Image (cartoon, rainbow, N blue to C red; front, top):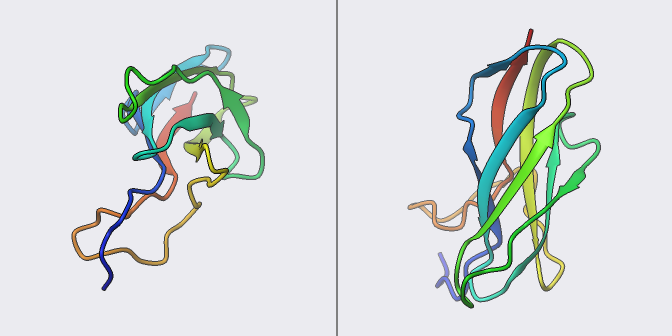
Length: 122
């Protein structure tokens, strides 16, 4: 165990909830929030192919030095099927969220693995 001195960069997709269904040919609008503790989130990305490729999406400037930042994107899916939408933020020191986190403190404060939601395209 070690003392938490600063919080790692993290992001959450807040809309839609996991399990969303969308018709082929329609775009899925996502929204969420990102935070980097005392730093600023300078880049926000999403992936629909399990992290093989990443697309950037707009992120708002923070309202104040320690505020969460809003992001959004409109996603086009290539074909019908099951997808996971992954979100990844990068802070002003160039540190990005990890794909998976091998472990964190017992209460979960340092869990900053990429957030993901399930989407079914029909």
